[in-house]
Image (tube, rainbow, N blue to C red; front, side, top):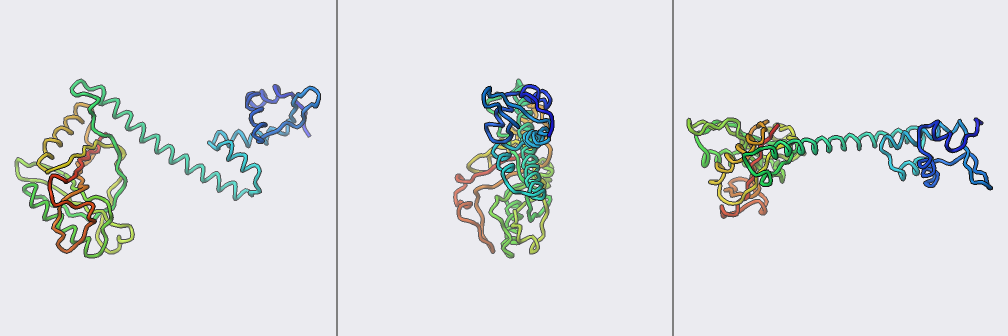
Length: 282
């Protein structure tokens, strides 16, 4: 049966506080072996240490009091308990990823606020981009404007012909931009649906854990100035680009020759365009 110990002795033996033992008792997680009806003193057996270990282990693993109570009062077998533990493991893994993203944003923000060359309160937005699957056309063109429009029209037609387009916004990747020498290495990207990957040529773009984002409305003539301002902000903040700049088109104009697009993303007036510049940083 095991030797009976007073609550203080049992708490010390298990490296736990008396307050916690009383809390576990109140929540019906762990009860003393005997309570003196006259004095109210609580006594525990040494062989209860194993039962207490289950509770403290589950708490250390991140299970809530309610979850532990439900588990202890259930009729789950070892397989069922193992399944719950695996679910908690996956939940904690997601939490860790979330905290890592928060840490990356915090470190980036801290570095930007250390700059003396710009107002830290006017910072660009720091955000992440998920993994994407796109149909793309990459080509070196002499300039922006019509050559890029032609590439987008070709890519949209490819995707539209097999009904593969997703609802995500199309974008342009600037792999190498040397406008002074008439050489722009660009890639137009049209996101595709997961269930259409067998119908069209596509490639995967990895997720971007942290990047700078600027959203603006109106004509594309603003892009060069905003791009330069973003690059200057990144440089002043002690950051470095970690991938090609993306120009993401959330609302735009299109000819719709041979394909269809949702009305919500289309505009016949350039002043109603909505564009985002996104630059991965490290």
